[in-house]
Image 1 (cartoon, rainbow, N blue to C red):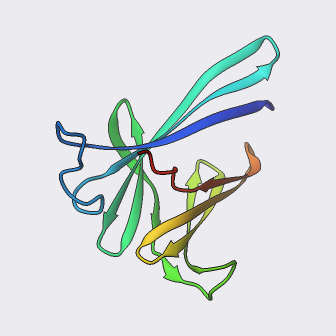
Image 2 (spheres, rainbow, N blue to C red; image 1 turned 90 degrees about the vertical axis):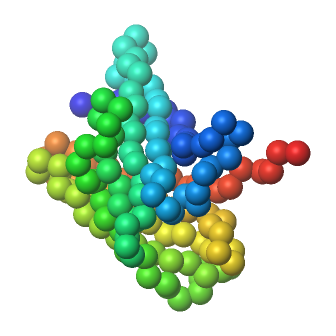
Length: 148
C-alpha cells in the first residue's frame, strides 16, 4: 500500500484552571503527544489518521507509551540519553531504541540540542524495515516563538 500522509503534531500537558502546569513536566506529569493527519490513498480516497503517545520521565529514561482509546497502553520506546561530542553549533544528547511491531522493526534515534538546560531543537528519526513496511521519517521540533 502506498500513499501520502500529511501530519500536524502537538504536545499537551495537564494544567490547573489558570493554564499553568502544577509541577514541572518531568515530575509525575506525562506529556501527551498527538499526530493528526490525512492519509491520501488516491485523489478520491482520503482518510483521517492520528496516533497518540504519552511521554514520561522515569528514573534515568524517557519512556514513550502508546495511547489507545484515551488510555495509556503498552510501551513503545525507552530512551536513555547520553551526551555526544559538540557538533552542529552546540551540545547535543542522543538516545536510540528499537521496537518490534509484529515483524517490522522500528529503529528510533532522538537527538536534542541543548541551550543551557532547555532544548532548542529535537530531531526524531525512525527507520522502519520489515515485510510490511520500509521507510524512514524525520521530525524536527523547535520551540514556538514567544507570544506577548
